[in-house]
Image 1: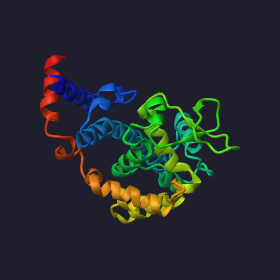
Image 2: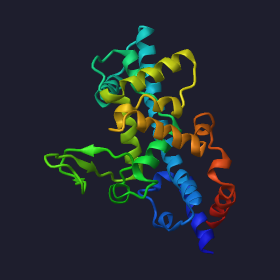
Image 3: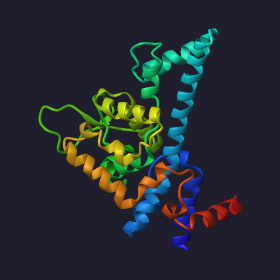
Length: 260
């Protein structure tokens, strides 16, 4: 019965991932490493998809906005305001630089998100994941944050606190899409997209040497995590492959619908 309830909860997470504020207590009771890894993906996958969809909508708006200008038509004040908000969000210096928007407003390979979240949060079991919903080790210099136990003398950074896992994923994606350190990543993604070539998490990891002090060793860690868990398949298929989400998901989802 306990095993069924655990699976039942995970199915609910799949259906309503946006309602997941933190890793549930049931997640930490899973003893089998393989089962816990599967649960990790089940919890994060719908959250990642939701964040990706928001980015796609932003990109679609930018494309439509500039298409309007190219036709010689007038944009509305609301559309102009939205473009200005996106320029601020993604740190686009020139307001009407279409290519700058398209280079920055784009999705992140799902396998890359999963791999970095697994590494940085120790599969959601780190102190910062539990106490701050911080999956990617993001820092802050503001008042609200957790002081690392082994922070070097003279350092003032804190671990940023997020209200939800969803907020952590969204912040991480924004970070990759606008921070100067990941310009190489964005250029490689943009080049691949323009040529119609795939740009999966394994390829993307090579451009994230600035994400960690480990540099090239870190990118190898990310690539190894993707390969070991076969997560590259997430970058080439929608919806998620049943083999990676577990065969019990469909059955438990039906059970949920019967229960509600």
